[in-house]
Image (spheres, rainbow, N blue to C red):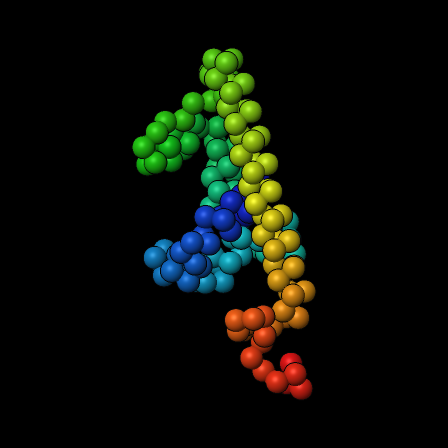
Length: 137
């Protein structure tokens, strides 16, 4: 999963407007963070990509330690994990990524079939009718 995909998923429950207000940033900047960084006119690295870039530039693990401490944990590099834990973690991460991808696929399929069933109408009444006379649809 890429950083912009993760931000899109994490921002979804609150919405971009609330996040922009809380951080005192523009709504458009929050939206740009959810776009791939290589996309034309994107122009803004999201905070996750910036943290990775800072870590790569400085090589200082304290940046990662600080973020993990704020979340109530601590950073442990994969190389320091015992082999059994590393194998378990790799398997768990692969399964979680597959579940997330399957959920996104199901949502896209559901949205597509809803579009076919309603003919693009979003205001359905019981019985599957749009609520507008056929000449206005």
